[in-house]
Length: 333
Length: 98
View 1 (spheres, rainbow over the protein chains, first blue to last red):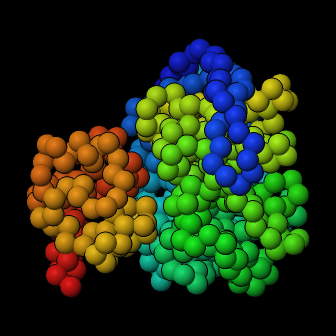
View 2 (cartoon, chains in turn orange, green; view 1 turned 45 degrees about the vertical axis):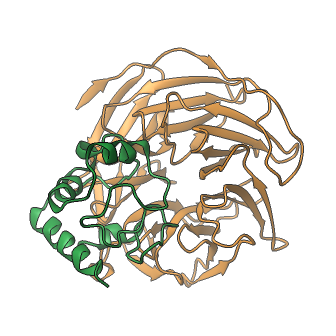
């Protein structure tokens, strides 16, 4: 299936007024200018997660259409690869093997798509796991794929052997975002459990790390270049940082009225990107200056649920508009 | 069981609306978008067209949420098996009495 969907084309300059410099307090987004480009995806795709693909392409999960989407931003061409019966893919990342690794809640399976051959491999979760509501995956430093399931599990898949092990989260429902640090350690967060957890790569045991704000709704997590964990807090509307070296936390309230922080991503400059649903915007936070810049959604209800990128580019899949926005940060181009 | 597909985002306890979705306590027959929850514009629009979650409406919604509430922010894409939907609705009706 090949479908050509063209970019909405325009390069937009983003500028937001006002500034504030109070740390750890609500602040307005600072002025700034970033070029963006918006691509139309197939109607009804509902792109949930996104990841850089080889050859400059971009992968996204077409959650409602049970497919992996492949966008070529050079031409705007889009094609979608069906992943299997009942597929409803949530997360996608690029593995160390250059393949797309997908957490497919519909198939209750981890799915691998090889971009060189087009081959699709499916690893179903063990029968006794039940429906896991698979969420997101990350590779540790040993090449093992770790994943979360919102119904209360996390697990590991060893690509070398195909062996899957599933573990129960201590708080039950909630495991959501997961990320690896530069040293190869893996952390995940629990949205319903409101915690961060560090996984012991050898035993699989998870050590819960409680954020200081109760019931904050830790939805996603990402690591900066120093191995600090950045957490987007859905309920509290905060962006929080956990520093493993000292065991300390620090939180910043997002700008605006009743903010809801959904996705978080740290780019190669250690700028923190976080989506804020109340304002229908994505914010770029500079922790050194404690300033915010805002990139509005391409239309109302953009509903960006995850962020990823590569040097010089940040990808924003708009699940509510069936679009994908690229923000060009001015680096690496 | 079918409720497992709802479990991550919806509680059954009354008033527990701090998950990704609102509580499903007594959802069968309940007014649409009536919980203390920040519903999407799609659900608020549905509430203006249809006052309550009848079993028939729930069945249609579970089969294809987008068809009933276009642009709903719920990411669940639907339950194609009519028997599974019937089991879920029956369970929700029973759970709501607790």
